[in-house]
Image 1 (cartoon, rainbow, N blue to C red):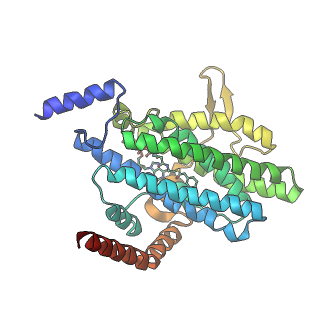
Image 2: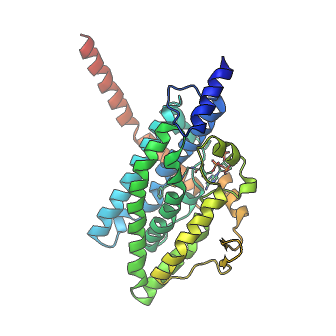
Image 3: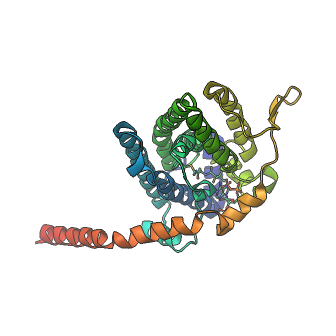
Length: 311
Ligand code: FAQ
């Protein structure tokens, strides 16, 4: 009976054990995991676009090779994550449809444009930096396939973050124009990167339950706080200014008091009104249509192979 299954499930969660695909799980747990993992996968796939924009214009062969490797890693992360979601019983095609029809969410951050090379630095440093901060605790997520995928992904994100930091470091130590370009890019990406952690805790409908299920280990605000604390010494090392002029260490709370985050902008981007929402989806849809022949050829090949095996 369900009560017993529920009790077994609760005991596993309580004991920090992992839930695996064949284990019984409450429908709401399955649903929230499909939601979070598929959104995460879509983010990786859509997240290839802002950087792909610079592959053909990277300033050297070495930079181009690094950027190509990074964007390919993101495709790989997307595939791991789609596979993890599939273990919960949702088909890959269904997730793809949801994305290209504009019914799925992906991270707000990928709806911002990348007008200069310095944006590659800012994305690596801030966007991958925020991703690491958010994803390291997800390595301990109670759902096995998600947690294990996160371990590999986090290793690669660390390399991504370093390469972004290094791009900015080089620009910040370059000509005054280069340093300004780095500062401008950081100004553009700083606030949106703080929004990646999601709405404030008191406006985060999913947090409490996801934390009880040990999918999330820290709240959105806790992780945002931790991220800002990591950035402060790195701003100094770069010699760049933090765009948050109100940022202060609070001796009493032992936390960073931050300036106001523009949550209206965040919710606007979520509704599809960001700079690049339409462009990102259009591009994804086009890529999907352009790839139709590959899917058909692969399916036909598989059909022939299995027919041969049967013969
Ligand atoms: N953008 O109740 P909560 C990367 C939605 S990193 C868009 O707090 P939850 C690496 C949320 O889905 C980026 N939507 O939700 C990379 C929910 O909507 P729903 C991807 C957002 O799930 C780097 C509603 O607001 N990382 O891709 C955002 O407990 C460079 C209420 O929010 C992940 O996905 C947002 N920023 O917490 C790739 C990490 N924030 O579903 C390429 C895994 C919130 O009810 C280049 N995900 N929403 O309609 C998570 O940790 C969580 O899902 C949170 C949100 C923390 C994002």
